[in-house]
Image 1 (cartoon, rainbow, N blue to C red):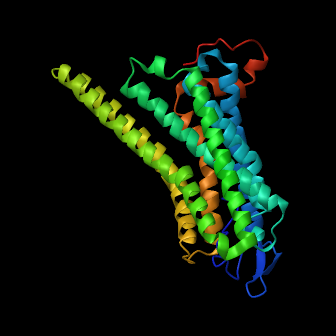
Image 2 (cartoon, one colour; image 1 turned 45 degrees about the vertical axis):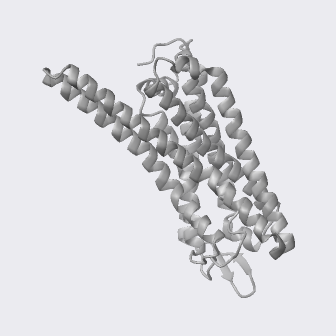
Length: 332
């Protein structure tokens, strides 16, 4: 989260790539080094990739009729969330980093806090909703279309956004109250921040882990059943094992990337809430950027693996959709 550490400033050291910090007078001034400039260029490039990747998904789902499914509407909402992360949160974090906001808080820092927490939480909750959708698709295929329809998906999206806004507003209101009354509000802030961290990271992680483990178990059970039915066909058995292996790898990629991106920042924030001053400014900002990179990777994970999205991207990038009506094209 771009808001930095509201409990203590002890993670800020006296060195920084982009600032000169005096920890005794709690002042800083911008002093961008060559590495800092290169990092700005890198982050700007990644921001552009995030925006363009998610924009491709948005255009594909809106334009092509074949992609108008409940599952893809969830992916569409996720893409909008991640596009806003790349378009809004990336630039705000570049200009108003957690370190600069600690020593020079302003309205942009507060706005950045709210937008950052809202969009980051929304992105995570959308991943959770997609895992629920996949659960019904794999584990209950016969009743999937009745249980997961457009109306249910709309409710999922609305709930995800409402929870995200609630978490962001609660966190920042509690943070401002703590800054005003200091020790008297510490317990309230600790409770709010702790519940916020649990609701926007740990709870979705637990839910997704349970769901994907259930999906994996069901997939293995189905694979064994098919393999036993075709036990006399080596070719069939090999195909089943390949499908099972592909499903396992896909689930590993989904959860692995998510955990790699979000675990460090959530652990860092939890340590700060516990009053453990063990993180430098550079490390803290690094784990925040790592979490934001998940928004750049989501298009690759949830769309690029599907052939119909790749076909849609080719039509868009080649400019063919501007030369005629391809909205009803068969995507393979």
